[in-house]
Image 1 (cartoon, helix red, strand yellow):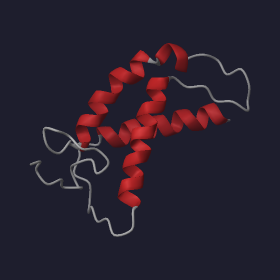
Image 2 (cartoon, one colour; image 1 turned 90 degrees about the vertical axis):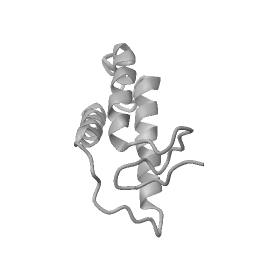
Image 3 (tube, one colour; image 1 turned 60 degrees about the vertical axis):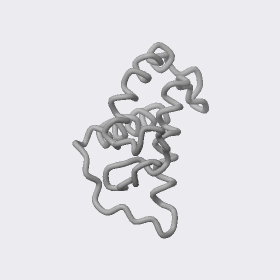
Image 4 (tube, helix red, strand yellow; image 1 turned 30 degrees about the horizontal axis):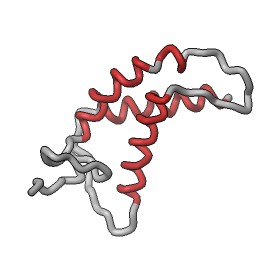
Length: 103
């Protein structure tokens, strides 16, 4: 039986066999994936109508969107997030990068 997840500290969109996954662990796990895809992500854009990103970057963004969707479901209450802020910094970096690519 897995331990209950505290949405202020744990992912709502992920199930872990070892128990709840802390929010802060994701940023540490995502950084190596983003580094692995850096050669693709650094390519100059070929068209202003197409944004090309690595599979690794797309996976990190998809995980963050899954979590956002889980937190925005009607009836979900999470309270203030208790975190060291690294996940917020990573998310802001990804958003800034996507805005940059889209302009």
